[in-house]
Amino acid sequence: MQTLVQMVYPPRCLSCGGLVDSDFGLCGACWRDTPFVAGLACDLCGVPLPGLSDRAEHCDDCLRIGRPWAQGRAALLYRGIGRRLVLALKHGDRHDIARPAARWMARAARDLHRSDLLLLPVPLHSRRHIARRYNQSALLAGAMAEEMGIAFCPDALERRRPTPSLDGRSRDERFAVLDGVIGVRPARRALLADRPVMVIDDVMTSGATLAAATQACHAAGAKEVFTCVLARVAKDP
Ligand SMILES: [Zn+2]
Ligand SMILES: [Zn+2]
Image: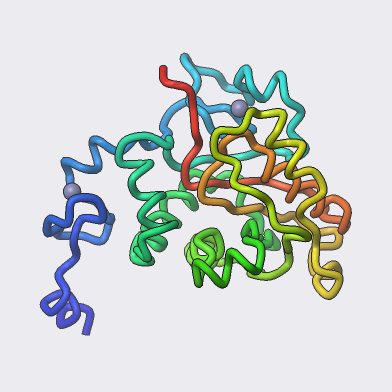
């Protein structure tokens, strides 16, 4: 059956559309050009760090800005093909990107695996959700939960009010706009209580959204909160 599907719909590279002979998602050339996070990375946001270390290290941003979550991972950097894939998933109806992307995220977060870990996507406000028809973070979290063999709850977190576009805003403005904006649905609080959870989003920029989601999880009694994003926005090296 799988062979028949592959004959009719041969796997194609997510980035350039060229034929590929496996389901890694990318052809060899695009794979090499995609900014995967590899090697030493910040234990809170996943940004690559120079050198080697056998203990948890933190980047300058995470040393300066308090991060309420315990540990965080990122699969890619938000540049080049990494940025293009995120935008295609978010605005281009390219749902086919979610599964391979979730596989990369599961790999980045494999050391945070716990059998009772619960994955929670960052929510869109319902008005934006209707306009866009799908929540890309929920697609990622669902595929990642399958990949990791753990639970996922698509609607535990909710936006309590719509937020304006954050593009072009300073870090302080983003934190001010997002403060208290995310909550745990009352009907889902029991699910999170005394349990490790992982907040899933497509992109981390300032970390303000992840911080708001983490605070909501703590308020609902989550035992530990982790984060994992498809792509981390980082300053150019
Ligand atoms: Zn390609
Ligand atoms: Zn960091």
